[in-house]
Length: 333
Image (spheres, rainbow, N blue to C red):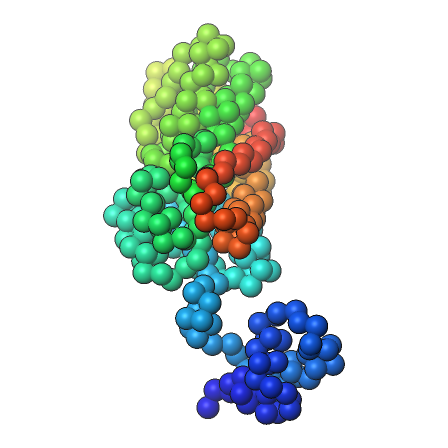
């Protein structure tokens, strides 16, 4: 049978109340260090594992945070999740990962699961759910941090936003291409999420430089779309001298299309991505891109959730926190 705190108390020859204090990490002057060590040794020898369900019923906390992402196969999101998980685990919390494929129906299904009371907090990258959709979570005192592409208004709701200014990041990347002498700069864009912000930054940089945009039809944030849209660009009568991709995966697809056309990077076409996923530095040539420091993004998001759960009064209004970006210059320019 599964050992209980009562069994530990009997083996350690202490009260069950003392066992509870020690195993729950509660500092109490009445429990000397030698007694704490005795309890922990007894628990280990019996193979004691805490009953999380019982603890949840007693404390009204699940000690679990949900991390919701649109595409778990995009290396950007596992890196973000690692940052969140390390911070959560160091504070005694587990992390559940939900993949939505960036689809409205899956985001809403995920919301329904969260409303069943399985988590204490949520870190979410939502392409479709807005603040009003998330209100039922907030009413149940579930801490929510959204990772966004721009600041969002939440009014007095206790909904926190963590963001990288994607419009400014795209603008900075496009400006760097202009500084290198490019005047025909095309953009291949994904759909949903940061799409509008990245397109806006690209267009603003071109407008300020007095240049015309060569934005092509949108696809998805993946290699296949990058490949397909780049083939369309290369088939045009006048091809660009540079391509700004909506993310690094699209840039990888663009690389394949460029090579297939017997062109070289950056001699024939320069290429800029967005996100700085781990593989970006190892492709040939190494990809210039916009870094969002996704591990740090996940770490800070988890810190904000834990602060909301354990420190802030429930009525505390939503917070906005901006994270940095950086133009990473490699050999694709």
